Each structure stands twice: as C-alpha cells, then as structure tokens.
Image 1 (cartoon, rainbow, N blue to C red):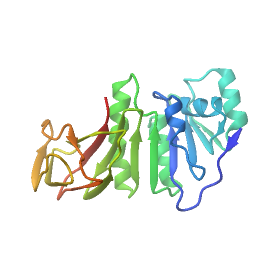
Image 2 (image 1 turned 90 degrees about the vertical axis):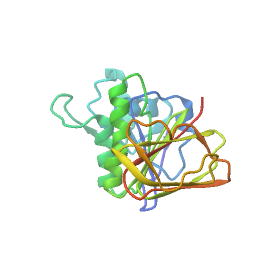
Image 3 (image 1 turned 180 degrees about the horizontal axis):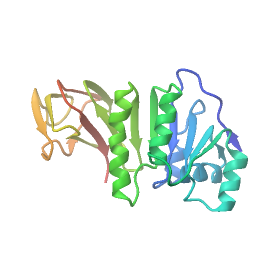
Image 4 (image 1 turned 60 degrees about the vertical axis):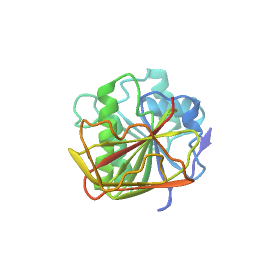
Length: 221
C-alpha cells in the first residue's frame, strides 16, 4: 500500500472525488502530494493501492466491504451524516483542504454523469479564489482554472484548445498574449461564446483581466 508523506507548507493537495476516475487520475500524483479521498474517491484510491491522508464524506456510494477497506487504509477518516450536512462531499473536501492551509489544490473526478454536481464543482473555483487558493479541476479531457487578474499558461500539447467563459455577469479588460486570436481590453459577457476554442501558439501565453471572474478551460476532443 503506497502512503504519501505528511504535508509541508509548500505541498499541494489532490482531492479525488466521486465523478469519473480512471488510471489517468493517478498519473497526476506526485510523491509530495497530500491526498484526500471524498466518498467514492477514497474507494478509488484504496482500490488502486494508495492510502489517502484523509478520507471524508457520507460514504453513501460505497459498499460495506469497500468502507471497511477505506477505514483500514486511510490515515485519517472523517464521516458525516448523508442527510444532516450542508455541503457536497467534494465541497467538504475542498473546505478541509483550505482549512489545513493548502494554497494549491487539484480536484480530480469532478466531472461525471450528474451535471448539477459538475456545475457545482466548477463554482468551487470561486470559493477557493476567495480564500486565496489556486484550484484546478482536471479530467482526461479538460483542465479548468479561474482567472481573477492575470494567469500565465505554459503550452500543453495534451490540451490544444483554450476557452474563456465568464463566471460573473461580465468580464472586462480581457487581454490575451501568445494566442492565435488575440484580445485587447475586450469585454466578455455571460452567455457569449466568443471566447470558445482559442489556441495557444507560443510556448506560453498570458491572460489578464481588469474585473470579473473568468473561467479558463483547456481541453481536447
């Protein structure tokens, strides 16, 4: 059973939650990561030979045998009532990561068949940003971040497309450098698709805004 070391102030937290998780997710693990398993995310980790530093949630999506394995394997376990709680298991995990002082957080398994959960997980980017944390949502086809002032992206061949979509009613002062379709002091409004499917052509690109919340989505087909 692989056990990751306890965290230092510079460690990032990886949250494995209950959406679509396959071997691609394990490729994101680094030896220094602090790993959190939320509900079925904890089952995924333990089934693949990893002991999460923290397993939490109501665990209503796992079998009794799977729960026994999580209980025996996780370094720390926190369970909550499936009805008497305010947050999803994913948000509980994010809030706990923020509470424990992590400034960089990666969320894996945030996408699946439940669009309400998918959209709710995307909205967690705002919650993390309000606490000064950098949250990234990743699956095998997408990487989603939030830009609140300036964001620099290194070219990533796996994700050839970059789309910009407002999370606020509008985003002003949008300026792009290094992209095929540049913008300068542009305004993007909620409901517009003008920012979809740009391409980063330089080795790195810069996105800056004056005001608003801008989703930066890198993806592949």
